Length: 180
Image (tube, rainbow, N blue to C red; front, side):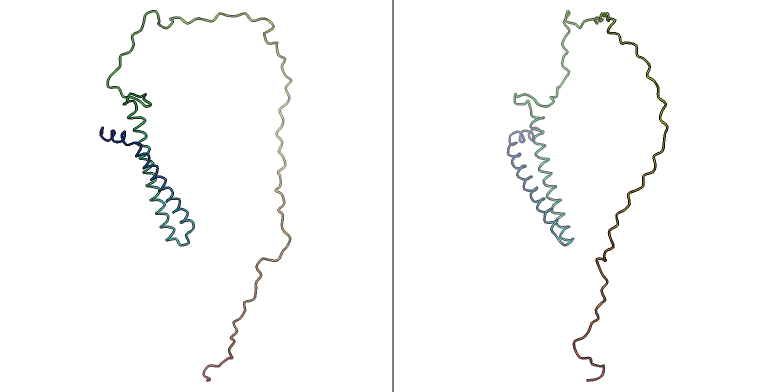
């Protein structure tokens, strides 16, 4: 495991470049297959382009996953191993000692109580007079609104007139059966 992390740490910039290039290439192939699928006429051709698009998107997602995994390893697992600041959580191998309390710096034992303040007589709210009560409105039923009348276009002739079916007329003279 440590050798794999060391390889990722050493060649991370190459992994980033390869994954970005591969993701861009396969994304363009997926978009091209999608465009060709939309322009295809036959369902067999459409199904073939759908398969191409799905394969290209799958490989695109694989490149993005490798890119993300490399970034996770660099910024979370390997952060702080070279003496730099750690961006991610660090694992401790044992309990850390708690700092001992210092006498005299403890939290105050009693909480101060606020002193009551006198309120001037003018600040007291004046007595309010009761508002006159109005009888509640009676529920009246509004007349049912009628739907607006439909606008009917003036009578027009139909778009498709029935045309008589032309009969097939032969241009050659009629020959009766059996006569030569």
